[in-house]
Figure 1 (cartoon, helix red, strand yellow):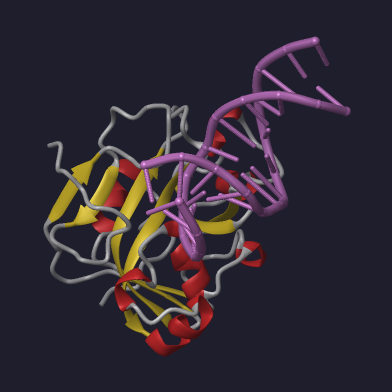
Figure 2: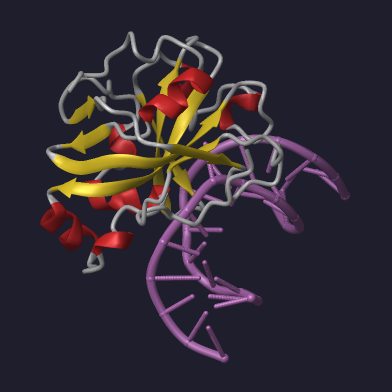
Length: 190
DNA sequence: CACAGGATATACT
DNA sequence: GTATATCCTGTGA
């Protein structure tokens, strides 16, 4: 298992995104395998960084290899990984995990038995791991975060992104093929 | 399936 | 200032 550090994120989001499928994300020892994510780049009208820096998205403009945590619909927290180059706001939205560690802790936080739904969505995942706005801007290669690559890359399916109204034509959603822990099903478009 | 919940940002008057 | 949209989810029809 390789520890994924700053150098891993020092590349284009579109290279990084598919390589993160199958990686293990832990937060304070709780987490699992990434099975779903989406890429957002700085020329992307659907991305928060597209219209420039604000108080909410400032950590998107910070150094790569750090977390960008934002509040969605005033209710949920969502976790992104900031990618190179610094200062233009490229990031990967983590959308779903397959729970492997600390499952009992996640069940308590989510008040939910069903393992399949513990981390099946960006807001659910943050609730299960206990990630909030306090953790915005933290480095991913240091505690409480832990991020490890996998040795054998899983089969990947790409498709259009979810929950956006702009740039819906680009297939920048990546999923582990056949995973039952996805936030929603995917119809492979390419 | 529809829709409320409610912070943050932008686009209006 | 008000109105509308948003990288979502739980609940109830």
